[in-house]
Image (cartoon, rainbow, N blue to C red; front, side):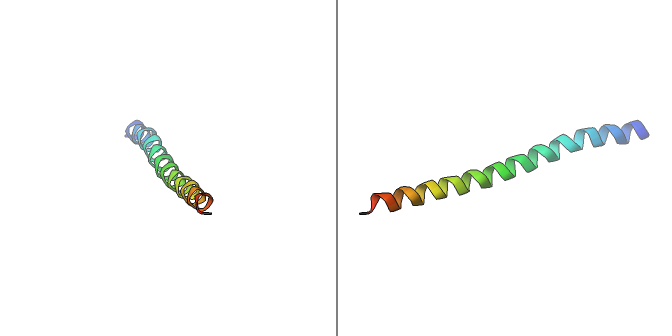
Length: 46
């Protein structure tokens, strides 16, 4: 029973880690794209 629980923890942890990393990466990418886009638009307008 203990080994089963340990196995579940070992499988759950990386999955949660990957999910968090993807979520953070996605929001950071959106922020960067928005910043670059707004900077590009403001530099384009005279």
